[in-house]
Image 1: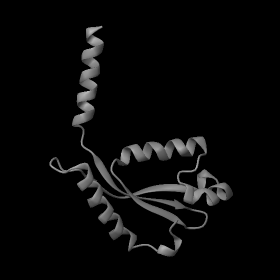
Image 2 (image 1 turned 45 degrees about the horizontal axis):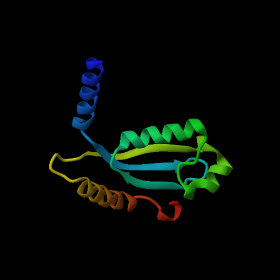
Image 3 (image 1 turned 45 degrees about the vertical axis):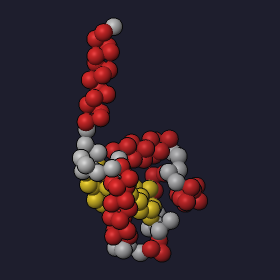
Image 4 (image 1 turned 60 degrees about the vertical axis):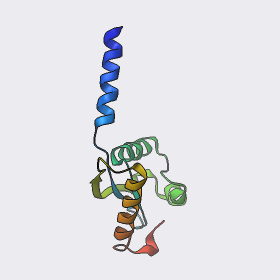
Length: 116
């Protein structure tokens, strides 16, 4: 039993020490070119959520629901535009703000008329 607790502590410790990689992503509807561009604190978690939604044929965001109903989940693709690591001395709120500003820079590069 002690080995299980020690192993659990080790796993939790490794998780807490892992580097947080956030960034800006774009989900594009390949059928009509509309897209959603957002920043996320943990890109790997978002990738997992996106993959799960694809497998379950679930819509990722309410703003996309109409197109999802019309074109299906396979019409949507995920692209990471920029990845950044959270600095050791950076708060989660500070990291979130930095990512939000980065997303605003990326938004300038795309046709806002096609954004969800």
